[in-house]
Length: 161
Length: 115
Image (cartoon, rainbow over all chains, first blue to last red; front, side):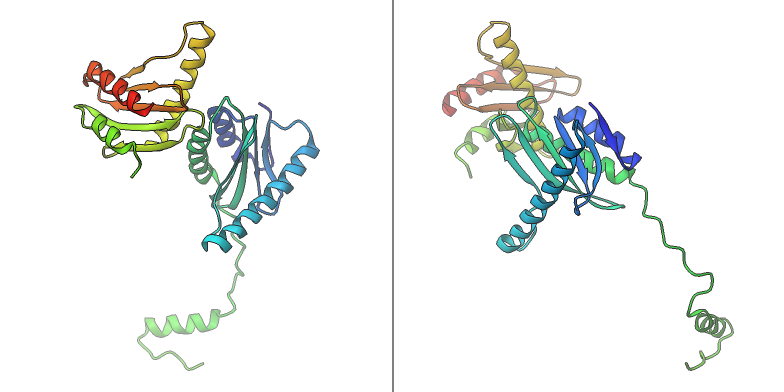
């Protein structure tokens, strides 16, 4: 199956998930609707539309869950006559994503859920940490910090600020 | 407690049986289960339902009729499954040394009560 990713660390876990769960289509996106990876789509416009609708659907069901149950609904499953979809969030060190999976009678909801749990673990393990914003060479409270440390080192009372 | 619980507990009481489950063949989801310690019901249900469905479709394609009893023997355990006219499949996970004949009899009894 054709897989395209914006972030390379996503490709191997997503490919394994699609193969194991026998998914027809899969889409990994930011909650804002920005695509991270796709599998099985042939047209760019379909990916953009699916991303926008999946993000909207996730936001809607999450908000509905908060109203009804006090917590956002985590996963969404819809069974059509031929195809079914499973929409669920994935948490990684890079932040939260949403995964949309479309499958047919070749697979089942149970299989998709089972392999989705493995996808979550794989993505969490593969995600590189977010780059840390560089700190200034000399912190704003450098002098205060230095005085406090010197006072501690030499057993003095810290100078009043 | 579902109406299936006494039937599942009777199956799990058999020597060597680790888990018994009622599973939806179409969805691969657990309807009810009786599990011993350290058994992942959701995983067993998804895989056993998939296996049973594949076996049923294969038997039909080969013009062998309906699947009566499915047994998978693996190195560290065995899976037995029976299904009837409904979407429900009864699945048992057992030790390799468990008495399959007895499990088979109990599974067919359970299937009769299910239908």
